[in-house]
Amino acid sequence: MSDDGDSFGNLDLAGRATVGIVVQKRIVTYGLLISLIVLSWAILLGMGIRAAKTFTLGKFGPGAALLESLPDIALPPFLDTFFQLCLNPSFAAAATIPQGLALVAMWFLMALAMMLPSAAPMIRTYCEIADTARREQKPVVHPLVLVAGYLTVWLVAAVVFAAASMFFQRMSTGNGSGLGAGSLLAGGVALLGAGLYQFSGLKDACLKKCRNPFSMLFSRWSVRPATVYRLGIEQGLWCLGCCWALMLVMFAVGLANVFWMALLAVFTTAEKQAANHVTTYLAGAILLVWALGLFLILILQTQGTL
Image 1 (cartoon, rainbow, N blue to C red):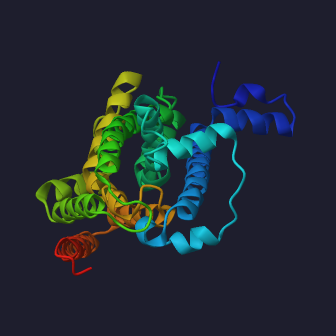
Image 2 (image 1 turned 45 degrees about the vertical axis):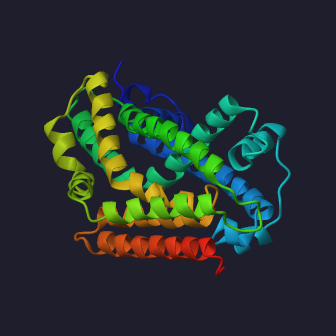
C-alpha cells in the first residue's frame, strides 16, 4: 500500500485530512516534539514555583521574585514527591535511589525543554531531506528515530548531571538563610569551568557541526533505522559538546530556576545560529567574572568580613 494517501481518495474530507496527518512524518514529528517541550516546561515551571516559595531569593537566584509571586498550584501526590526528591536534600536523605531517579528525570526534562528547541534546525533539515526522498518514492526512516538517538545522549548526560547534583547537595551547607561555603565553592567552580570552555577549541568544533547539520545528514543518508539512530546519537554528542558546560550554570543559580533555564535555552539556540564567536566569547567572559565574584564572596566569608 502506498503511504502517500492516494489510495484513500474515497474518504470524505475529514478522513483524508486524518490520513494526511498520519502519513506526513513531518507533522507527526513536529507535533510530538512541541508537545514534549510544552509538557517539560509546564512541569519545570511548577517545580520552579515550588522552589521559589521554599528557598530564599538569595539562595535560589535571579528570577525567583517573579516565580514567588505566582500562585502555588495544587499538585498530584506523585509530582509533589518528585519535587521534594529533587529540591529537598533532607527529604531525600534516606532515599538515595529514588532521589537519583528523580534527579535523572529532572535533568532529562531540562534537556527536553532547553535543548530540543536548539535541535530544531537539525530535525527540520532531516525532515526536508526525507520529504524530498519520499516524493521520489524512496524509503525513508521516520524522523523520530533520529530524535530518539539525539535524546539518548541527553538521557545519559542526565544520569551524569544527576550524580553531580547529589554531590552538590551533599556539599551545600546553606540552611535556607543564605549561601553556604560549599554552595559558593561548587557554584564558582561550575561557572569557572563553563566560562573557560566557551573559549576552547572543542567548543568551537562542536558549534561548527551543530550549525551545519545538512552536510552530515545528506552525505550519510541511510534507509536503515540503526544508521539513522546512530546519526541522532552523533548529533546529540555534538550538541552535548556545545552545551554541557552551560548546563553547569544551573548549579550556581539553583537547579529549578526556570528563569535561567529559559535564558539558557534562548542563548543556546541563538549561539547555534550565530555566524561568529561574539555570543560565545561574551558569555564566557560573563561566566568568568561571575565565578570570580563567587570566589571573592567565599574569601570574604572565610575571613569573617561578610
